[in-house]
Length: 436
Image 1 (cartoon, rainbow, N blue to C red):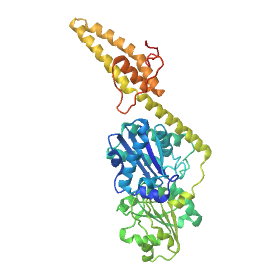
Image 2 (image 1 turned 135 degrees about the vertical axis):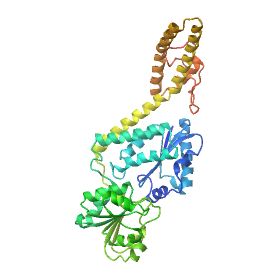
Image 3 (image 1 turned 120 degrees about the horizontal axis):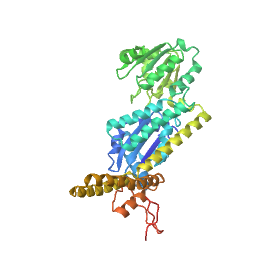
């Protein structure tokens, strides 16, 4: 049973999202260690979203309680955010709705900028990180791989996202109201991750020619060489920040890289703009008090996000809903696989026993061919019928029939047997009434 806990810009204040993103310990292993009922987990954490996807080996009725307990405890340990802090700031999904939610997220439908492209890569990286921690499961692998396929389908099949909309580009659009000529701007970029690369592309599209880069982690020179830029050494960072017309920060550092003291001690006396795309904040709030500085952070950018393009969004949601329905159908069909496998194993074991007895009579080859053909014919209808019932959400009927007819109990440990029905019994494999 799939479970998802989600906190986003739609449900939680910016300060809470920032606290959730400041993790002292990897969350996925903590959730996975909650108990044997947790089969796997993937954690997606971005500047405007925190989500925990959990694969649970529990009956459907217990999924919400178990998932919340596992997520709450891990979040408390890793970030200090308590269950009370999360009350009213998160959304919870379990079962079929999880797929549609993730597919919508991956496609950019739930982003601050609807259709923004970065989220697709972030979803893929979340799965990669879970693989590194060893916390994925076959169902989560299937879920996240289908999410990526859906994102590509939305990108290729609708107008959503074709304009290259992103937080970076919206920030530059907002900054453009104060910049008359981008080609004259001296820009200092702080950070070397995927957002930094996207920022360089957006700056060049705006006509910026003078871009330097600084990396608090020491990767600035290599990144600058790759993108044809110059880099700033740590000892020159403060002066470079003061000299720049525009500073853009997008690092994963947990502590601010720029504060009011850094600017004033470096002798700032003029005008300038700082765009903070970091989560948690790369720029201390007191920078906004420095005379001449305009600070544009994620919270401000979010407030200026444009309205959705309704036609493109509707088409994208239709693709997402169709993909989620197919994902759910495939999952229901797979739910009867243990029963089908057990039935085939049982029948083939009986067949092999008869073949072995035929060998003792010197009739093995002809008998074996005939029996294996008969077994294939006999299993065709039960196998097809079992898959059909599972697709209708009646996999319990398949397990009941297998146990009643053959004495085989192949039901998974987490499955709950269906309650006895008083009506005349019907064999799910053949659809015919049984004798009472």
